[in-house]
Length: 619
Image 1 (spheres, one colour):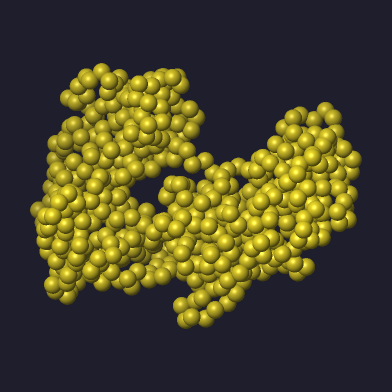
Image 2 (cartoon, rainbow, N blue to C red; image 1 turned 45 degrees about the vertical axis):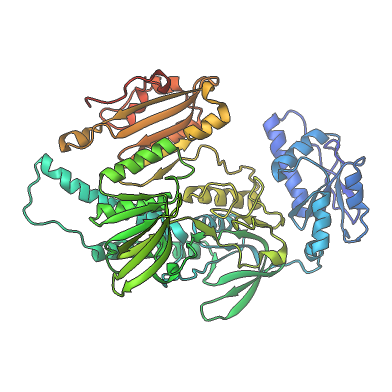
């Protein structure tokens, strides 16, 4: 029953109520709240079964006087200060209703979820006499989010294991510890992007007085070897970090076989089983294939590109995602003949004005686009490194078909969650049947109370490495450190590393209109000309800045967009300001650093609604 904080906490025999001692008088409200939180957590930690209930609640009565006779040990909380207790429980569990039930420190939820746990056998499992496990936490997946969670839990004194296994791509590519970002994502992508930018810088350098006579050419093998050497050092660093924190790392494929038990299968097919009190799923995603003749036999994906032992030559990139455009931009920047085949729109989910500006710049700088086509067959004409492939494609708007011959076909049409073959059905974890993504609440908990998930596999969350890292760390702190802070998925900045980078934070213009209505918004925008581009004679009205403001919330900035050099560096700082409630007036009050690209946001004057010219004629 929820009532006042009085009396002394006593060890409760089965079926008896536990009380809390008074927090005393003269304390600040924050001190009192912190003490209440500690004491509630103490009850949860110190009792085999902890039920927070109200005497007049029929659902509480159903659980307490249950027909399945599994609550051998009951502890009740009696307090006259019920409102504060229930508010604190809501912060701890994200559940505002009672009964609020914990079994062996695992939050079961309310009445319905507890009965469901009984029907599935989970409740009986948690109540077994021998409730010791091999580990406090097993993390499945050694990517950014999984490693962050595992190491944070270990720092908090828990016994932790990480299971990580890379299933080779259809082309046979695999990699070490660290996940997509380190091995086949952000890190090699950014390094190859830098290689392409250096090529552009070489062209610009002549205008700045640099003279060189010999023909400059790019060596693919030298680049990939250097990048892979760096990645290997990162793989080793991750393994060393786990060892230093006493986290057990097992290079095996994890699959649930029953509640709290997982089977680990190594490369040789040898199986070992482990148990844990809690599990975190952080298995990430892998590139999707087309499902047409020849795709897995002859096509590559981003899993293969960054360690490809030979220059890919003339390349067809299939897809319009940020992965597709980034890869196409890199290859073009290295001097290759690149075509992008687009089914519908560029950069779905991003601001579409910005997406089209990205595409326009790429097209002006050598990338060819085939719009409204999809491949229907890939056929090998010649073997080799690279060989020759014939691609047959069909129009999405009619019966027209086209053919093309390429050395390499790179698929970047999306990614699929790695959740379908890990036995989640055996323990009742729900996944989206279409996407494989896992629905979670706002504390990253699945429908099975002791199983959590972080990273790209979460339904409706951002698929970004820093998001997974933040979510993983905070999850460990909530589970094992008494922390209440949740991951904030709002106003997360990101950058698309196309030849001209696109950085953004907050809402796209389309989404802002959908949420706030067009008449309630003001959009400020302008072209700008980076000083570095002037002497080099590069485009003077290509780089573009835009902010979207809510007129009826003090012109708060709800969308930030920039297309230009070093867009990621520019966006990161403004993202912090947006977290602090950035407004148009605050931008106007900020003195810019001259001459930089970022300063353009401190001098924005022209609104879209005015229709005034935004072209630039000076620095």
